[in-house]
Length: 507
Ligand code: TNX
Image 1 (tube, rainbow, N blue to C red):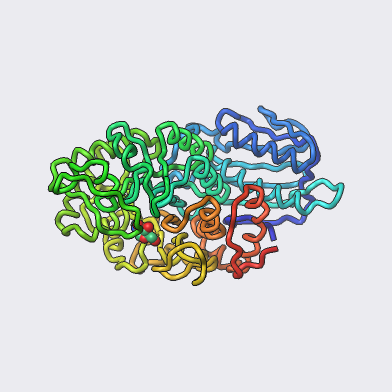
Image 2: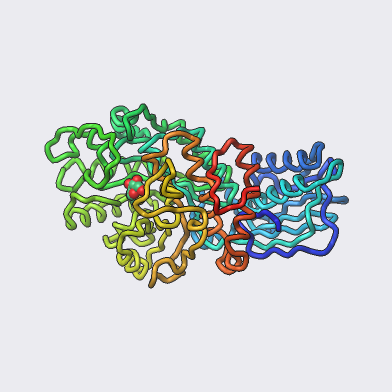
């Protein structure tokens, strides 16, 4: 068993000698400019570490002698640097790669740099495994094999709620690292809610001045400055991860109502909220200040976002009339379409008049999915975030100290054992764009809490998103659990806490 997670589409072990990692290992990169320096350096370092000596990074033709060769199959035309990528089927095709290992050469090939990046994460897992297996004084050996791999879904994401409790740039960078290791390509940040506003906007400075530090339970939160945001974007782009920022409207807006009283019917600012209840706040077009507010914040958000998507929320507005809700979402759609970005919305907005291309995110397993089904029927793609499988804020088990349980308990097997294509009856699988695992943070306070909820379930969600169903069915949960257990050294090295579920035999 090779501990590859997510499992590749095709893996053939060859009955032949493997590649011996003897220093100095040569790593040949034909066109370095098209691959991120940091990704390359990381791989070269690992090759060095595994072989117990220096590694050589060579640019140009592979030449003579054993080497680890990275190759862009078509010369990498239009490599598009580190620009955030659309999470579409066309883009997903570019994430494909092949990896061949024999005694002479490790050959990683892809049509595009993003494919090389995904393939490099596989190679890193193979290297670690080889290093672990190597006997005393023996060089690690990569087994002879052929891998042909491509993602099942185009959108493979994790969402972090940085409002209920705030997590700063350093922690968010670690989340991006974790996502990238397991081939996720989207990190969705829930930036605004009743309790706080976490992204500094020049057009509306009071949002963070007055609502930047409040959070659930009353502790001292913080927010992302413009510089923090740029820093995150850069970190994500280098790992081929697209950041998807969410400003949640027309509900979950108390922090905005606190900062800008003009948004409330009375004109009075709303008091700070530090409780965790939901559904009570709203903005509507009945207030003349609302549309200018929506224009300002979404226009600026679009300017701050190099990726193609902005998330507009739309969930849980219990106090609004159907008409006011529909009018609002219609206006939001026009504003966002005007910025050139693609809108993403939570499933409640599925029935509204949405711009073409709007992506709908299914979440509550307790809600009727018929609106999502109909939206899919009208041609909208769907992201699957069913709360009974991938809500990473659900408790693992009944007595778990962290998390909620309104959607039941979600242990590792539950987060892995489901098929997004058939999760909702009557949705054409062609409309299922992908999978995203949200982590809401009402009960998640520290970095340790955060990773305890993410790991190991996020890895299960990543495999659901990347690996074809037939491949998963072949191995079954037991096979996944074995590969999962082999990840522990990586998590330990990073200082990432995890929940040692008794569904898995941890080595
Ligand atoms: C529902 S999921 C919410 C969040 C809560 C979460 C808690 C969604 C779109 N809205 O506001 O944090 O449940 O599980």
